[in-house]
Length: 280
Image 1 (cartoon, rainbow, N blue to C red):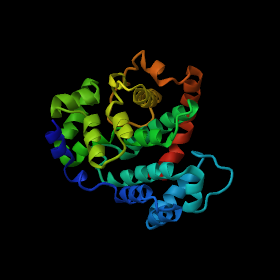
Image 2 (cartoon, rainbow, N blue to C red):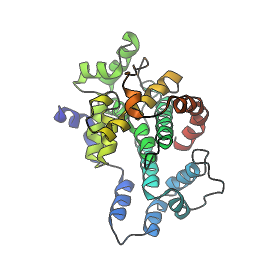
Image 3 (tube, rainbow, N blue to C red):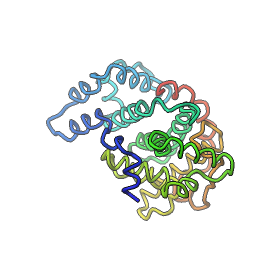
C-alpha cells in the first residue's frame, strides 16, 4: 500500500516546504539565534507580510501592533511561528486546482475552521503549544488534494460518487484507491519529516480511539471533535458529503468540558472569514 501511496504523492514528497527545513535546521543548531530565524523568514517578503497579518489579527488578540518578525518571535515563540509559516507555505503549494474539481476556498475554510476549533480546545485544557492543533487542522485533509493533482479523472469520480451516494469520503477512497486521504497525508508528512505527533493527529483524525498512547489519543480526539463540529456548522467543505459520526467515547478522551465546546461552537463561525483572507 505504501508503494501505491508513494506513486500517488509523486514529486510532492520530493518538494517539501523549503523554508520549514531552513527554520528547522536553524532551530536545531545551538549556535543559532532569533536573528537567524528572522532572517530566514524575512527572505520571503510575501510570507513575512502574511505572517505579520496573522499575528496582528484577532486570532491572537494582542493589544499592541507586532511590526517585525523579531517581535513576533519574542511574543509567540519559534515553534508557533514555524507552524504558522508551514501552514502558509502549504496553502500556496496547492494553488491551481480547477474549481470544477473542488472549490479551494471552501476547502481551506473547512480546514482553517477545524484548526481554529482545535486550537481553542487545546488552549482551554492547557495543552502546550496549541499552534500544532491549528496546523493539524490546516493539514488534516490535504491528502484529498493529491489525487486531484495526480489522478484527476479518478479523483473527480470519487467526489462525484460521494455526492451521489452520501457515503463518507474515506470509505469511497478506500474502495477506489485502496487507501484514504488520511493515509496519503500521513505518508506525505512523514516524507517531509514533520513531527510524529502532528503525523499521528492527521493519520487518526477519523479514528482517534485506535491510538494507544493516552496523550496522542487526546490530541487526535480533539482534532476529530473539531472536524465534526465544523461539518455540523457547515463551514466550508473538503469533499465530505455528510457529517461524520462522533463516537461516544471521543469527548471523554479529549477532556474538553461541554460548556467550553458550546462556547467554541459559537465563536468559530465569527473568526473563519477573516482568517481565511489571511491565508488565501
